[in-house]
Amino acid sequence: MSETYQQYWKDRSWSCIREGIKTVDNYAMKCFLMETKPKMLLEIGCGLGRFLPLYKDVDQVFATDLVDERITHCKTLGFDNYKFEVLDISKQTLPFAFDTIVSTQVLLHIPPKHIANAIKNMVDMTNDNGHWWHCTNYAPVKLSAPDADYSPELPTANSFSHPLPELFENAGMKVISMENIQFFNGAVNTIFVCKKEV
Ligand SMILES: C[S@@+](CC[C@H](N)C(=O)[O-])C[C@H]1O[C@@H](n2cnc3c(N)ncnc32)[C@H](O)[C@@H]1O
Image 1 (tube, protein in one colour):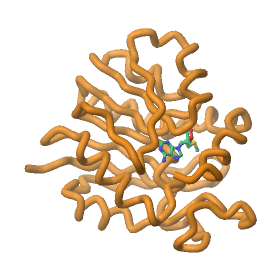
Image 2 (cartoon, rainbow, N blue to C red):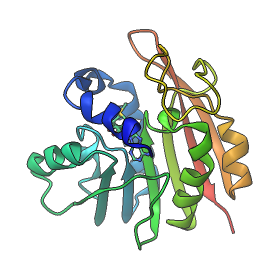
Image 3 (cartoon, rainbow, N blue to C red):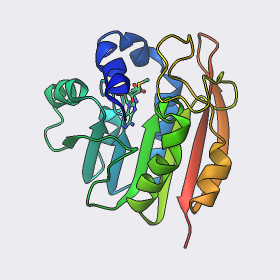
Image 4 (cartoon, protein in one colour):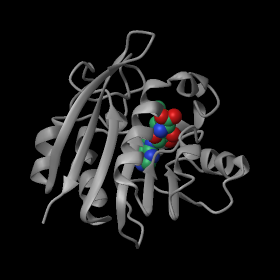
């Protein structure tokens, strides 16, 4: 990602208190984890760490984010057996494979020119028969310039609508379910559950 894009997230690191009051997605992820019982889980874009308590029964947890300040903050939350890494999913992978990868409100922020790479990187880190759980704005998000990396002058500067079902399926991830959830502020998100079928 460009430096401007990284700066966007650095600048809003501490203004993201709203992230902490969305509870429906938290409950939905809890149900998913109870069902799939992962042993090794990777979170992409963990932000201020609001999902970390849900992973306490997972043997190995890697929580990652683009922004080092967010990772530094997450390290203070008391999850001493988790691993925390700065990771730009559009550019990097970890040298491990996971049975579960999760993200919330991250994929919509990845610019169109990087989304295929981000998905490929996640596929490369997913075990055969492994699962994904991604909660993201989907069709309703207004596009900023389709080829933009980051356009601070636009009101929708950093939100993008991607054809996620198609991109997931083309990358070898079967879309098992797509479920819309509505937050109390009216915003609608879609939860994608996918499986890497062999
Ligand atoms: C809207 S916040 C959501 C944070 C958290 N998942 C939550 O729901 O509370 C988006 C997060 O994605 C991170 N992010 C954005 N682009 C990323 C990328 N390319 N790779 C990894 N993380 C990224 C940001 O730094 C930010 O912490």
